[in-house]
Image: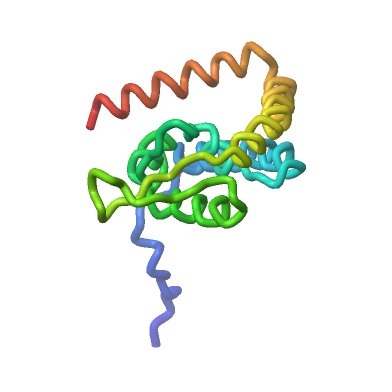
Length: 157
């Protein structure tokens, strides 16, 4: 009869770090900040992702999904999921790209321009909440660190 306690499969793994990893902390902060923006923009029927998409678009020039994804630092499938309901609400129009018949261009409609302009007050309100909770010095430091970290990570690729 074996009297040694049974070893769990995880017992051979190295010990876990005491705190959360950087990715988890960034995701947690991102969710919290996104929630503040989503609450402020909800009165205008938009999420922060949808507002950002509308803000990237123009009534004068259409953009491909890939271009929008690059501007929003998002995956093309995520952008497609944002585009479809906004197009269904008449805020965007989707047309065939004349230079590449396989591609589609997304345009901001007059209704989309109006919704974006009206939602700007919600966006400013969210900005104010984030600054109030962090304090202007910490917000400036956070923006600096995020910009610098992004540049360094991009340069390392």
